[in-house]
Length: 398
Image (cartoon, rainbow, N blue to C red; front, side, top):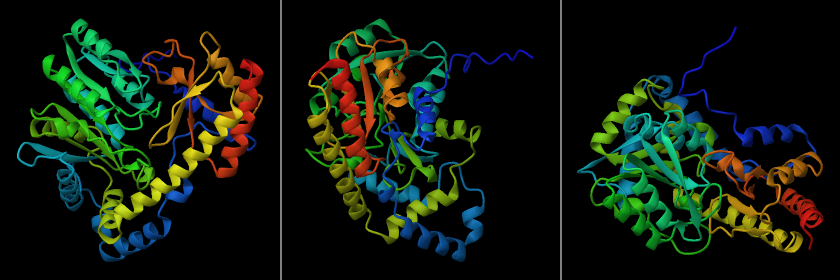
């Protein structure tokens, strides 16, 4: 039988990340392709204790349906915490718990965009969000990044050329995949352009709590004076991705529509994950936990960068992130990036993610690839970088 898929999904393809990850089933492969938290970052003992107490004290509440907006104690806690960070205004805004930050992107697009509306994003950007946007048949327009963030002239050109732009999607802190951070001056300029062209900003900040060097940069949400920013946060990188708990902050009118859209998607975010997150923040020093995570990722990032400095061909450039989980490497112009990534995993047993996976269209030209330092062990980082370095020198010289 020939199956006719809907227009919303007919153009979606399997993520190149998932295709590369298939190679990691080989126990000999060292993977720098994933984006998972470090195994040592999980508070396993605390989770066991909290889970046992929740199931002993009130198991029905843990296992029963909850309200779509989210577990009320956690919502109120997050409102307070985000208000302290100048990211929540109780008079004009609301907060909804979601099934990870990924769902915020899907709900925002579903609530605000019609087929053919323009959504502007960074190029490159997070593949999960790109696929969510594509599933609603939006006109996805990528804007290149420089060392300060989205290129302003290119962004304004895109806004001029697309007066039907509904959203500007941005990952301002330790961006996935590049590891870059948008400067405060650039954040202000992007917000000013959103005002000038009357569009909304979708600020995705899953890595913001993982800054391990450099100075804190206020979120774009702190600049929001006229209800123009939808903010997405997540517990995936700071507690556990498996609990699937994220949240959105936006004007009340937008959140109310996102609630209705969520009701036809998954009804609610799972109670167990929400209650676990709440109890963890109640019973443990969450800020101390974040400091521990930063220590882990600082050490891993510095280890990988030192190895790359020593082993890689000098013709390879790469970012030096101040936080987050990723390093973006760029090969010489006009080289076969996909061939390099394929050879790395098939011959050298080192998995990285080709940069084309993060472009608006995988046919868009890039000579970059992404490396992750959070998931592999220290020994794997040392060995994998050394092996990959040999390939770079073999292909591109010293």
